[in-house]
Image (tube, rainbow, N blue to C red; front, side, top):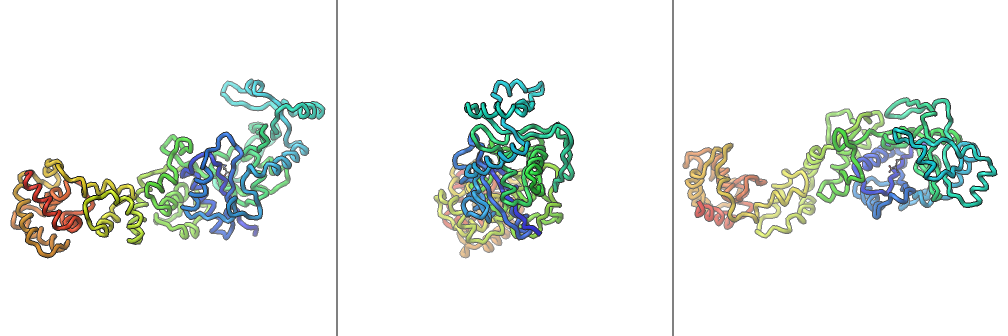
Length: 475
Ligand code: GLU
């Protein structure tokens, strides 16, 4: 069997959004599953749309996400160069071959003439005008330096059929196809040409890419046929949508890997989520390591219908990964978010409390706001419908709790909790009521990452008593 070779071929035109990452991931998974090769190729032939640093973003994303490529501009390989702008002479040579075969032709038409070909629906279909130039006219135009492009010469009749591994057999009438530009007037190829030449020369066996390329694939197949080259397997991937009617878009700055990473999302959680956007592992399991994905991935599980990117699901999955993190690793990643805390607290205990309660590391500042942000909190918090507590109840409860805590020798969660249990009996209130009142008095916040006894341990005896005293006075 020939070697499985997949390529991730991003254009450096912006951030790597979740859709780009998914293409990279599927290429990686398919190659690894089949002991094949995963190749990175930078498609930078559209110089006008290039964005500074976009190539760094691509490398960084692959590095952080652990999608290690076997060949590429940075690691080399025997099929280089892997950057399209460095392959100019290669494309020029193959474009000439197509011209000789009659499968492509020079086109000297200017903007004005091309604009006049736009029909009522706004579509511009080239009318093969320059296909009919005589050899003499062509060489005169070339000699006088008239700018030109090279166009594909698609047949006017017949059909082109191909099989996509996801969407099945597709047939188009050749008369629906356009004479695409293959080489631009700047001497660089378009994607419509470069992808064919490169996928052939780099011996790509499986082309994974977004389904927006499905409609141009017949054009590419005509080029493969003109060269007499074997056509690769196509695996077109369904769209990823922001919502029911909008695709994720690079230009709109939609969901991109670096943003999520910077917000404290874990690469393994992002990859796990992205893998399931358009691929069904056919099990109930939702959490998969990269190795498991490599084992399980198959083209048959790729769906035809669009997937909706759901940030809530991603957060949930990320929360699962955070919960399972090694304690030290959690602490290392959480520490930068603790830096602003001024009140001395037990960082180890804080981490234990937070680890099971956050969906992303950027949740931490809000979750720990109660530590410093205490003074003059709203006393109305004591009035709570769910817990059935009132200000009056707080007035009666807190002095008793304060005295009992003052006398407590053992400052542990268990000792404090059992003290609260005894006090609920003494005071004749429900435990839920006491816990609400004490927690509000200790934190001044309705939502905190732990209950009234753990809170005492977290902020220590001295500060606990001080906050209770302050509240008793205010009440
Ligand atoms: N350079 C194309 C893009 O970034 C890649 C398409 C492909 O994978 O063939 O959209």
